[in-house]
Every structure is written in C-alpha cells, then in structure tokens.
Amino acid sequence: VMGIRDRACLHELRRTVRGEVIVIESVQTSPFSALALRVLDPLVNRLRQPRSEDNGSPQFRSPADWRDKFEEAGFVGTAESIRYNLLHRKHLFRLVPGQRSV
Image (tube, rainbow, N blue to C red):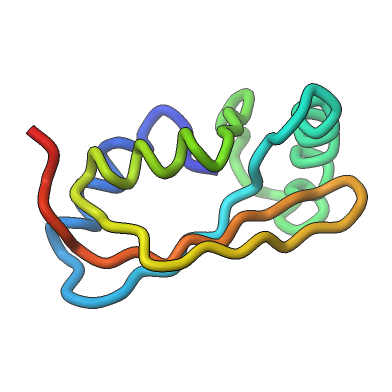
C-alpha cells in the first residue's frame, strides 16, 4: 500500500515511465472491507516478509480515490479490473502517461 509517500512515488513514476503501468492495490469498498484490510493486511505482510520494517498503519483508498491520485500525477487510466475473494478486494489499474493536472 502506498502510504504517505504515494504522491511522490506516483510523480516519480510518471517522470520516468514511457509506456503502460499496471498497478494492483487493495481497495476498500465498504466499512467491512476497510476493517478486514486493517486487520488482515498487516498479518499477511508479516507472513510474507517476517523481517520487514513496520511502515505504520496502512492507508487504504477506494477505487475513485486511486483514480484521482493517478490523474493528479499525470496518468490516464485505460482499463480497470477487480480481483477479489470474500475478504480481500484488489483493483487492477492500467495506466499510461497523459496530461498532467494543473
């Protein structure tokens, strides 16, 4: 999950990318999904990388919030797809460089 540094990360990605970018992010779509993500995501991340540094509390966004972030960074969304199971919804965004917002 891109946290506090997501804006800088997206702007750097936009500055350096020449083609398509695929972003897969966990998204919240309801109060239940937000709770499930806050509880389960840190547990799963610890299983994947037990020695990784804790980056604080994750901040999950809705698909609309991500679209706004991508547009602000100068990307145009060309496709979206939802991948999910009962507890975890992931949103896939296909982006291309476009006009930057003013």
